[in-house]
Image (cartoon, rainbow, N blue to C red; front, side, top):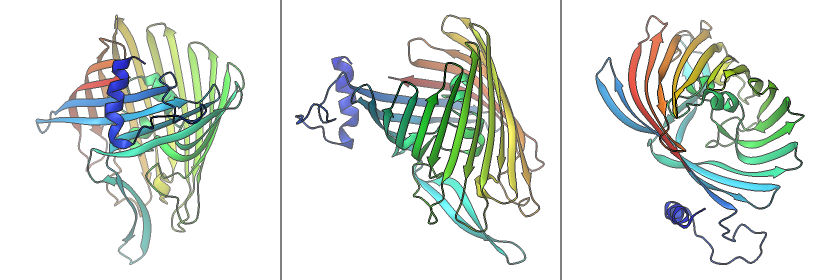
Amino acid sequence: MNRKAWIIFLFIMAPFGKWPLYSQDSSRVAGRDGTKLQPIVQVFASASYQVENRHYGFSFSRAHLGFQYRFNEKWNAKIIIDRGRPTTVGEITVTNPLGQSLNVQNTSIEGAYYTMFLKFASLEWKVTDRLVLEGGAILQNHYITQERFWGFRYLAQTFQDLYWKIPSSDLGFIAYYNLNKVLSFDAAVTNGEGPRAKQDASGKVKYAGGLDIHPSRNIQFRMYYHNRQTGIDSLDTEHMFSFHAGFSPLEKLRMGGEFNYMVHLNNAVGLDSYGFSLYSACEVAEKTEIFFRYDRLLYHLSELMESSAGYENGHTLIGGVSFSPFSNIFLSLNYQGWITGSDNGNSSNHLMLSMEYKF
């Protein structure tokens, strides 16, 4: 890390802690070794124009600040904060016309949009060249494979993140095992509530497992399942099934898709959801790509849930051009539209100028 980058990083991180001046032991993180400590900075921002309301807006969708420390070849630690709305509503009770009460887990987020919170804080142990263990506030591995293949997270999340709001971080443990160049596995046990919520009173957890298959350099598949339990009698276990396929027939062209099925979304009885996403990108000039994506989202509600708001079937269209003037800087002019499939829903069309930078 050069001297200028180090000074900038210290200035950013100064409000969050004190840096010790001396190290008592070379194996301790207290020693400020610039070769082992790496800053983590990633920012997403956008300017948007909503066609229907003629409304202009500017926003930050991500601001990761943190660092990673490498103790040795086998041990690494990282800590990252993010901006976001820090308060979850949590459990609420509703009553139907018959006077029957129902406990519901409300996942909406409240509070200031740009409050910083601890998102990742994990310790990683590379047991062997094939096995890696990680614990703490970890990065979950439910949609990371398809997010990387999609390649445009800075302008739109992938399916599970966009529609079901599954947090990318959670408290618990995850293990990765590479069987060979073709097959790799991952398994996780977490609290299932994200990094900002404490474990529920009954100690229920989320179990998850995934399988990655790379039959060749240009083809990849991923299968994933999670089981998120609850200690509330009136709710039920959430099950998610996911399948992703990616194909790069040419060096500058990639095409992929995913199918996701959720049983008892947010542990709610009588609420299932499913859908698919198809995406493609092609490099048309140096550092320039054009891309297109189509999503289909569907809900299946029981009679008791049909009056619930916020569950809207529909289609999403995303398309545009992305340009990278320098390494780790990305700009995109794109269109994002939602076409409702519900009688009481509203369609929307947005023109976006999206940006990402990281170092």
